[in-house]
Figure 1: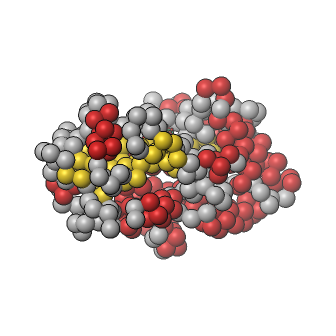
Figure 2 (figure 1 turned 45 degrees about the vertical axis):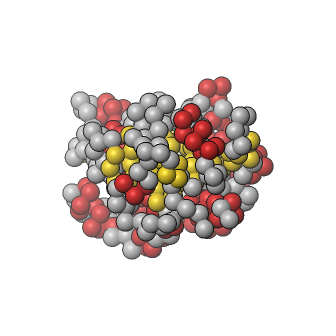
Length: 400
Ligand code: TRH
């Protein structure tokens, strides 16, 4: 059986803060460097919680930006070097060379998104009697090559250590995407009326209103879309969590800002600004809507589990490297749709990502088909298995 963290001289072990995890369980360190926004910490925080709660691992999350973290988990105090939340020990990663207050090496070391581990930590990994399972958790891509590279080892140039590439993906042979065991039950038990009262402060809109959630980066296509919704033959309720698209929504309504609690109406469109909520509450926004606009990585995954039609605003990369990723995701998600509906969906996703002009009627005439496909796709995706479970299974094969 694997031991918990190696106790190097001067180390205090993972048990320094009581996480509630039984001693002797697999110890796991996750290193996360926040590039921007919330996706890096969003994925790591979700993975950390899941490994702790569903696998009983002793998880330590070492992260360099506690302010971004605080937005997802208000219990995290950005002023503290070491704390614990949701059964996970959280350490502030002060500088690339910093490896925690005491050097403690876990059984499993996850380097998220190619962030470089502190050199002192790597050399201590090499000195450890039982070498840790070292994983580089990559960004999600739906492209076909991902399955070929998933779980490929990469020997360290200097030490007797192997790093294994763990690739999330949407297809067989990849690491899958995160999905908590209780997620579907939570979705099925969702209280729509209660949600509208608590989160929006009004009764749920009557049948016939299309409810749309909007989590996106700045997007020049937003004005056209807002105009189309304003002129729609049927009512539209737009839910906008405070964020990067809020300024454009405010400008459209002639308002100075679109902060939580703001409401605005023009023609058939009624828009509501919502506060940014802690991560476990984010799903309910997706469940409340008929169509979700999502972005980045984690919200993109959550929209798929919500079983509702969605539109993805992909994270832009240099040299347009994001465009093949967008089309690879579409190839999975749109697969099986009749040709016309598929073409509408593709046109709309492309327009929302800079190629063309979005046409709401063209998309939404396919509503029933899109809803059926969203549910079917969630079933298919579930067959790939949950990322945390897949990761834990792989680790089991390595820690013998
Ligand atoms: O924030 P994102 O755009 O994140 C990223 C980063 O830019 C990252 O560097 C990039 O590499 C990656 O995208 C692809 O989008 P994402 O991934 O959807 O993360 C947003 C997180 O915020 C997600 O975990 C859901 C959460 N969230 C809340 O917890 N509460 C909220 O109210 C909202 C709106 C979101």
